[in-house]
Image 1 (cartoon, rainbow, N blue to C red):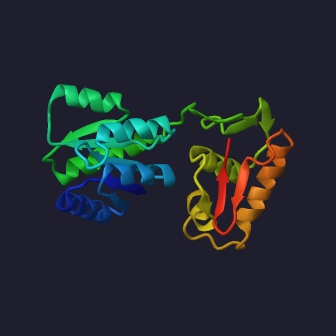
Image 2: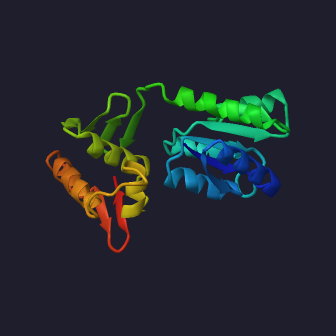
Length: 222
């Protein structure tokens, strides 16, 4: 499981990271709100731990911006303040849970496990990117109201690009998020699936929305 920890206090960030890695989580750390948001928009995480008081962008603003961009990663907010209004503001900003500092490792780990279990419940969330509509719960997609017949990998690839409209990803990044870290198939597999998606989108009037960024990779435009 991938966890993003957004915490500007070095000692606390290192402590959380060590605790989670001992429990076999893969952990990335961001030290300010802007870089934390970049991580959430660029990569796919199973859960995020977000401090409220951060440089550049506070935790409330970060959560709101992430949700506005379609990020559905469960988020747990950390704060040294226990005021009810802070908890309400955090939840209203898009956080899923709230934990007051100081806390014990076991409680943080338990809260994250609960969020991970909750995140596995199927939803009917919908992604809309221009004229492209993706029903994540039903695993269906359409363009201009016309259904797109997609295989499982094609759907995951299109969903990943649609969650990150306008962002360019390398083939390695796409492999990491759509397939897995240990993929050992043909080296051109991303190009093959992008080509298949393009043909299906073009048949529905969506020619050109998956763009090749030469020397880098691919992105979805609207």
